Length: 332
Image (tube, rainbow, N blue to C red; front, side):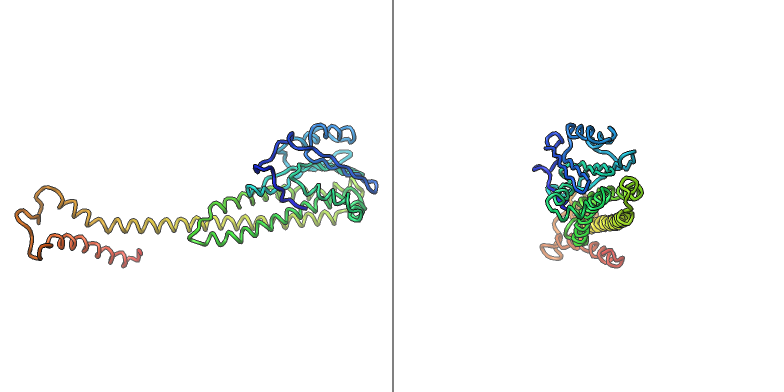
């Protein structure tokens, strides 16, 4: 399955009404799988006629921003999950919503086309008889397990790309000639989004084992416990990635601050060394009588450049003294 699904040409999701809705159904071994892509009101109304679904659950399929949930009704189990979608244009991860209805002899999946992994798996089962027999051989609960397993594999693949980006950004962070602020910010956004998705999924999967058994009659605890273990490992991976990127953020900030301090130190030293000459030139450039000033004629006891030599000496001597003191204090 492939979660790397480019969005619209401008890199943004189109509105639901602009997308073409598609409903496909396949039946095998007394199991019906209905897959609805880009649901609209018309498609949802068809579900009302064919299945005993609660109106609130059907409304959740059309609305956005719903929190992940698992609810057990008398005749079916309702799941609402979040899955990631990678926008290759903007290099960002967005969150898509997947609604699932599990009954004793049916499975209904409702999702946007950006969650393309579900439709790809649906087509594999429809076109490959061997695969269809393998996935439909037990119960809708077993079919649901395989759907979720493919979603987790997509999530795992995305986490691998995050790990690769962490390795790449490490070289940028510790290179004092390159700033990694923007790349770190992008990576933090991806990790935060994935962490939220995985965190919700952990709680949902923990409740799946007893619920699926009630509606399908199969003991699929080993399968769903395997999903739970996998999602917990992904959680540990994303937590490690979050801690790593925070370390990189702090390291980049420290190195940027150190570079700024070095620049300020150099500018401060230059300014400090220029103070004696500035003060001397300011005082003796005034049109008033000052101690040591020349009232009549010119100083020539050191030749025609006596005045210049004295001014340079008076300016340079304090500079040398300050440089010696700075060196003694190990300021540079």
